[in-house]
Length: 238
Image 1 (cartoon, rainbow, N blue to C red):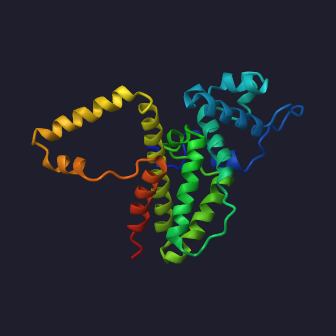
Image 2 (cartoon, one colour):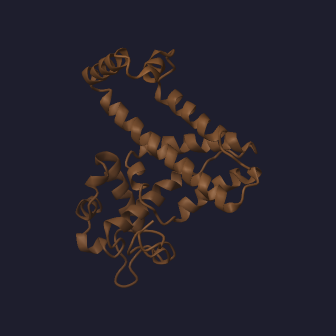
Image 3 (cartoon, one colour):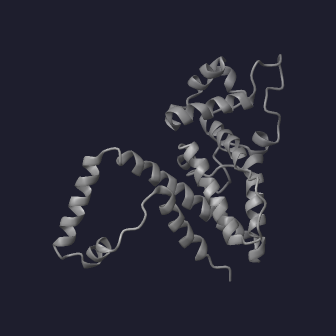
């Protein structure tokens, strides 16, 4: 949360952002829309990363002048809000809730993971508080409905949603980094030799014991499932 204690990023007015039409009020009808601009920014981030998203590049994508974009998104921070909510429209599940809140929450987390892997820039974008738009609010409503059987109060449900999203975002960011590192077999082998040497010196007996334990499936899906089960199964509903 910003230091001034207000929700959202400084300069972003949630009412103006989400409750007003997404096009300039004056002048002739433009050849593009806020939706098109946001979609172009998302495509750019998917292809080249979040740092590649600049007002100039987005303008080039839609064939607009840079200055005209500021009528829709006055700065990159506002554009990020639009991008996050735009892709959140993909999160609306088609399956109905089962009533088993732990199972439903795990399904929601798997949906979030797949979503963030499709948009690798999302974990970084979510690290800053965002003003929830209509798509994000619809997904939040789904999560809160899944948590209804817990009997928790509303504040606790919101905390669980935040905890789950932070877990998935952190895990996906690590997963992407690991996938990049694994493309260098020499580096992975060097790290394994280093840990084996440290463990053999006898100064870290707990680490040595941990490294000697039987291996577990190391596929990204299996690892995510283990971590997720520990998180969800251990949630306190008292």
